[in-house]
Image 1 (tube, helix red, strand yellow):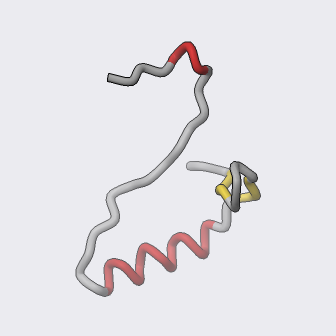
Image 2: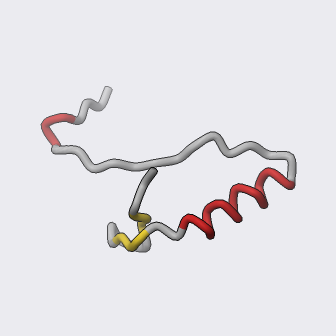
Length: 50
């Protein structure tokens, strides 16, 4: 599981898991599904754009 979350302009802070679980439950209560979301920084030479 992730340990950090983005705040603004690439700044991160410790992950607030309780907040995100609540958000997922709110979405689920509306009949919607949240499968996953994540981000990871990689060196520029490892990126490929089509």
